[in-house]
Image (cartoon, rainbow, N blue to C red; front, side):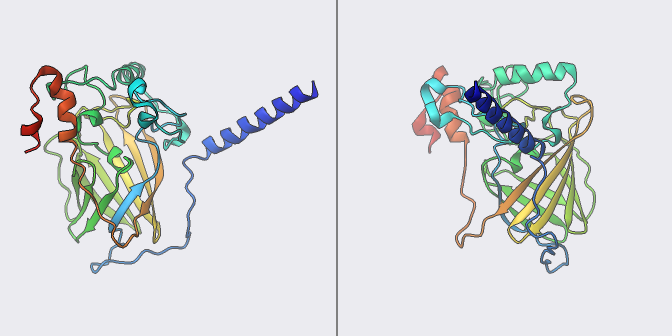
Length: 291
């Protein structure tokens, strides 16, 4: 009996600890609370450099346990996803009722391959699977680094994944004339924080491999705040009245690469996905594709 009580006490303590961790998941420790970032030649905070997130949010932006890959019988541990805390404030998404059902359908179809290369097809899986651009904010927490360049008129972010990039216009507001994966970004400085308003997305954006998604009404307001020479706090407010009942927030830390030879490497995924998409139909010629 005493042994059972001790076991129950230990289990209860563990649950309480885990609950405390989950509740604090989006509270970010400030390494240097009085930090003042260096300035560029034109006087704005200097956030240039190579940055990377080390969250597991690309698998699921909510808290999650270890997950097998969709073809675990073939890929085994290679395709498994790590457990991780979420990056969403409150650790829940305020889906409209129909959208919650749609997210479940997305998850079930996440590994579906559409050989027409058309993301508008209802039966298309995760856009990452077929090498589409990641969108915003997902590009910032994929397991790839990205580089920030600054001029007085623009902030340019180049992502290692697929060589995608986005221009943040600082000189004048640019309307979103077209819908795109990365949207149209307009920025301004509020003290040491770069605030970016991103609109003009297409209707195919997913936030993660779990199938969490948005519509073309998506609006993302980002806040990039350097908090030490090596850390930058990233926060974003997500709004989409077509999918969610209210705005919601995410937050995580970015880390600066300080290696002397730090650089972005090429991750061109199109040649990787071509065999998956076209070989079953007999359209794929490896010798031609790699020319």
